[in-house]
Length: 481
Ligand code: MG
Image (tube, rainbow, N blue to C red; front, side):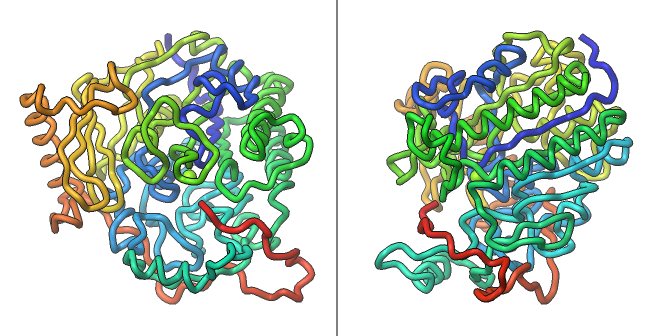
């Protein structure tokens, strides 16, 4: 089917929501009626990947359609912590990068980011310098504010741990900022109230732009730890605070969908729902679920990067579809660009493909032989081509394990010795990827890598002043995530 030109695009991105956390992906405990309904009215992707198992590289990659290491998120250049950025760092998404927001804005879209950014907190890196007309939200993770220390563990201990694993930037703990456009308007906001405040801005944005194309990127704080959530969601949860936060995300989706319907924009709006990386599962101290996948956020096993993805576009996307082709967040940029009538960048390498044909729309079919690289920190750790996934590295250590994801999505049985030709083919793909994207562990400089953004003399967005009336208190849930 041919898509009508210039649909509105609403991209909802959760933080650390796992593959098994929604009813429509098999959760027996979380209440997600609105998202289950959204999947029934659109398409649910079973084999959709984020390009990184952690926040900053995942988001930067999604917005630029480029692997994290292509834009220098992951190695020493990005601070040495696998590409995750902390407050007041000198690095961030290079202002020369072309984001989805910039492409769409150049085609006449109104653009707004509400929620978590996490691609750099210095003025040059903020969303308003990356194609967003407006910004309202927290510039990095909700556990990067002032929090009480767990018993027997001080902030000094944490600094030492980060230094030991190669952090090259200062480790600071300024109060969590709430930012409007490029100004801090509050410090340490009440996190339990934040999603409702986000929604207020979202509804206003939808109403104000009902007569022109818009791009709303709604980046939830949930379900990243610590979880502060309103009592009404807790009271109804069968899965503690975690289930309450998932229910709040579901409720927020319901509000956005209801507002689109009320404005008569349903058929002219694509709504996409996903998550920046896998959940922190119980075996890692979290409460999320990546079932039936292996492992958690932070790893290049399936549970770290295969996440829920739902797309709904009434009248254009046939309802009730399940897409099991391998698709990725890198595909959003060329896909959204095509729908908006924009050209993806031609002056640089990007890594996504138009996924329209996978969901019954116009566009070239995805190459079944295409490779997807799983990047942990500065290295390619695994590759998937079709049903096969080959792991060659984990946290610096070499390995060689092959999994048949069609038969074994949980990566339980290594079949490398049974399929030497497949292993050889995938190893060659990884070598190709390393030449292009580099590999800091192996000392390979990539030929297709662009620099991360860097500023001199960075300063944190906030300063600790316990006497300022807008500083409520230190968050009382200790850092765990
Ligand atoms: Mg995350």
